[in-house]
Length: 276
Image (tube, rainbow, N blue to C red; front, side):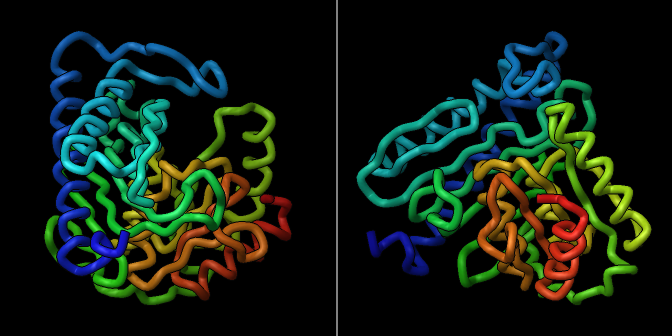
């Protein structure tokens, strides 16, 4: 258990995360060159879709990880759960932004992270290494706990903290109609208080945008651990934080990501507006 958290062991983890994410990205892009992308199933609502490529990409990542690290566990969005003995779990989102992928919008990503602890419980896990790869642009974010975050091999600096009224803030919306109504009301409260709002459609890319300075902050309700596990480390390794309700660890109820002072301001506005 101790070996993977050493510098040498940690580097092996991030290299594997990057290698598997890139391999899945190549598979995903090959899938776009053939027949039109089709919906294979739905999840929380008729608009929350799964494609055959989601499943194929997760299966590919799982196979590559299991070959390299047979004692580790797997926890994937599409149900690819495998028990392990090492205390480490690979958390996989094969296509974060599936609706964008379905429509050919170039904002989707493969997210692969390895965590210690139990990723099924809020606050019960910690990301050791992760990779978010955009197969369209080729941009690749990697991060190692305590060692930094990188975009295409370039170390990302710590972020400056903008004031709330100068902050460009990303968000996302639920696929459940009732929750979308609540989110629309909250958006109307927040919008006059910030520079502007962006809706990109991939939480993994949103978190990497916060770490890269393309967004000042991000918030969303209803996210799962596979949406945030890799991007979480990109944010924290560039000086930011991820907060949940009441300043607790992020959860499905709410994720707020930004440099701490801005994150606390955003959280206060969201909680006052009934965002949780």
